[in-house]
Image 1 (cartoon, rainbow, N blue to C red):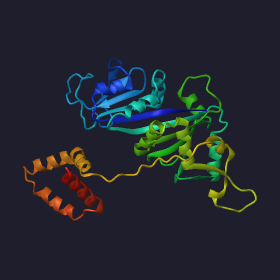
Image 2: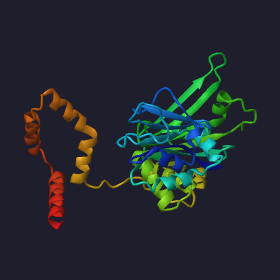
Image 3: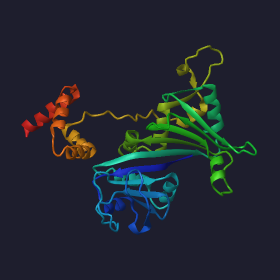
Length: 336
């Protein structure tokens, strides 16, 4: 079995294109411009070597090059798909790329997927996991699981089988699927393993940020992080044969699941939210609603009375966190 990064997506803020390209270790000349942007960005480039995309919004619609001025508010967004990760990793190290990215003051990791492949389904087996899930022989911090299958109309044979633990709309979920079926349908490879199961965990936003902390700061391996996440969120169990105990948390862990997760502890992926400071609130207003304020003010021909009314109304809705932020800000001003 092997573990790999199967998706990497991040945004670098307050950086120019040249610096981002230097960080990912690719040349501007190896990219071509696409007709449309994506995710709200006006410009999009695709790497000639594979499925790696760079998105940004240029401040000038003239000829785009590596020296072009870009919107610092939206930054530079890079998406490396599953196939792109394998293509990029042929000559570059994804872990080293993530480490270099952590040196930026403002970088957001929006999505990281980790995948583990069992090419013979000896431990991670789609059929075994599916049977255990149907029987209810598992416990999980995820509140739901889904199954998605597709079949060929003429013969009724499977074209794909996938299970999801957790909501696909959430910041953390697990996906298990029959990789043999997926490869046979979507590629022309002749030597596809007959019993290949893949298990993936998708980390988004804060969960992706915490994942990076474990990989870079704590120097944990990909395998340790993936298995530690599974130990925290999912456990397959064996029902007792000589007891009527219905409490699954007291049931023994299935031996094959123990084999997969041996020698790893539960991995904490939550981040304690720090109270927002006045500076952060100002920055949020500037980035998110200053255009709205400007639009309304212009429509009102410069009359700011509507804004004054909103401020008075809002002052009656301050909570303790707002009062604490004001006190902290004033203390800093006095100390300065």
